[in-house]
Structure formats: structure tokens, C-alpha cells
Amino acid sequence: MLSASMSAVRSTIVVPLRPASVCAKCQQRSISVCNSIPDEDLHRLAAIATTAAIPVGHGIIEEGEKADHFYNITAGTARLFKSMPDGRRQIIGFAGPGTFLGLAVSDSFGFGAEALEPMRVCRFSRVGLGRLMEDFAVIEQRLLQVASTELVLAHEHMLLLGRKTARERLASFLLARGAMSSSCTMAPAFSQHRIVALPMARSDIADYLGLTIETVSRTLTRLKADRLIALPDAHSVDLLDPARLKVIADGDF
Image (cartoon, rainbow, N blue to C red; front, side):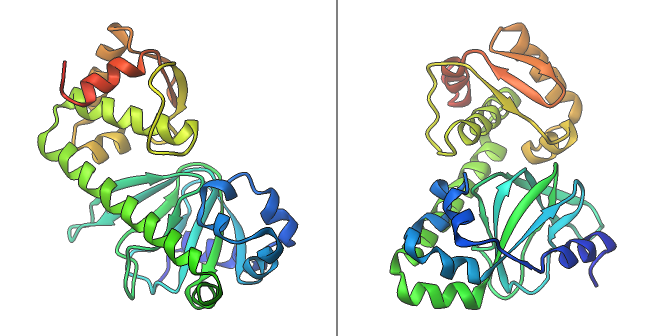
């Protein structure tokens, strides 16, 4: 049974997507699967989509529910997690604008997702998207590319948890966030600093990195003392020297 928050979200995802012209103007289209559809055919994409605003703390996906839809994040950040038998949750990732959720599943979702900040998502039915793929083979190719990227990220996370030190883990995490916030690619430019949003709590970062909250806070303080980062506030970090952070992340220091 869906929780009250999940039910509330489900009730909001009933409004058809606005005209195809809105899809064409979407800031996330260029980095999402939607860019596979030519402008003249965007009305077909809009016809199979619904959109919703997700409040902070509300669910987008409930672990174990039937996977009848895909979700494309157009604004905000989601926390991805898996539930443990004893009721605890393990953070397995964070998803931001342009992320297409729901590919690496079979009949049901193997993870849950909830909003860390106000979000907007587009929801596409599997059946509807399957019909589009019959006419636009490039969509299937794009989905395979996304799925391959997810697999690579999963392998990198396994390496991070299994082999890297706390300092290396945090440097890797901050660079990954910087890559997503700069151009939404996995190849960040390390030549200049940038301010990166951290909408998640320190406890979420610790859970994701397999560390304690105290270790995360202590490591951030050390990186700040080394003038590698600055901490303008509790929910952002200024990457002062991405190149040196990259050296740390790679274990070459």
C-alpha cells in the first residue's frame, strides 16, 4: 500500500503535459532522452507524458511497486534508496535534472526515490514509450546509452566503497556533483572552481559514501583547511581546486 505522501504525489500526476512547444523549450531536453525526438514530432512525446511538482520529502518511486512508468527529472534532486529487512534504508544515489529513472528494472522497481528539494518530473508510460521506439529507433539507442552509464556509475560506486579512503570518497563525490551541476556530463572541467549545490543532508552523504557523519564533517573541514574547498553554507560547496581534488579522488596524492 502506498504511503500518504506517495498517494498525494500520485494524485498530482494526472495532468497531461503542456503543448509540445513547452517540450521544445525545456532546459533539460538537450541532456535527456527526450532529445531523441525531432521538434516536429514532440507532440507525440507530449501525448504520452504527464507532469508533476513533487514537494520536499514526498516520494516519486516506491520500492517494489509495479514498474509501469519511466520518470524524467526536469528540476530538483531526488534521493535514491533501498530498504533493508530491519527497516533501515541505504542511500544508493542522488538524481538531478536530466536523469531518466526506471530503466534498470524488470517488473517492479528495485529502489525508492523521494524529493530532497522541490522537484518537477515528467512521467512516461512504458507502453507509450515502447510505441514511440517503434517509429524512432534512436530512442532505444539513447535508452541503452543511459542504462550503460548507470552500470558504469554502479561499478564506480562499488570501487568507492570497497577501496577508497574517506578523503578519496568525499573528493570523488564532490567532483561528481560538480560534473552534474556544470554541464550534466560525466567529464567535468578541472581547470576552474565552481559552486556546487548539496541539497542532501550530511547524514545522506555519509550513508551514500559508507562513512559516519562525523567522518564526513571532519573530512570536509580538512579539505577546507587545505584550501581545496570553501563552504559558503550548509547546502553548497565551492570547489576551489578541482584539479587537486581529482588527484585525491584518484588516489595519486
